[in-house]
Length: 103
Image (cartoon, rainbow, N blue to C red; front, side, top):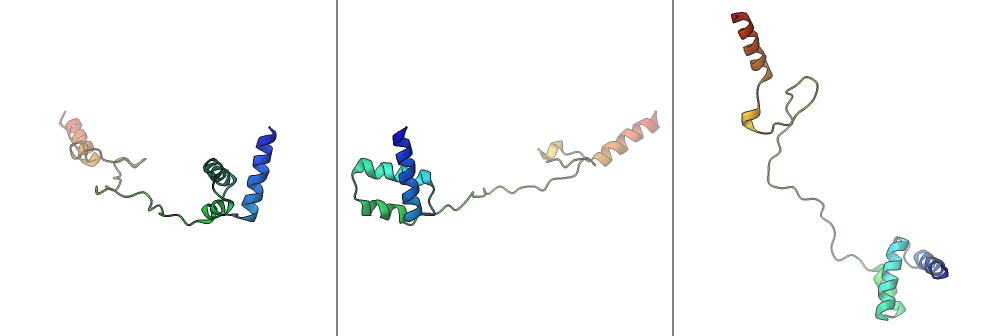
């Protein structure tokens, strides 16, 4: 328990004096790595303040074109699954009414 308190105090001190933009967890991870490899204190400080070698470019879009949602029902927007399954509700409703009138 005392070791964890000492580690916490050490990471807080390092964070506030050397690398305020880093989180305590990032400082502790780098401290563990450098303590295991027996690096010097200057190398540890350089590692804390180094620039990232690559940046995230975010999620890339695939080449597929997205369809806009169609309004098939007056209550909710639905996404068409397949061209064969798309049915014009007005035509369907008109067909049902014609069948009722023919009877």
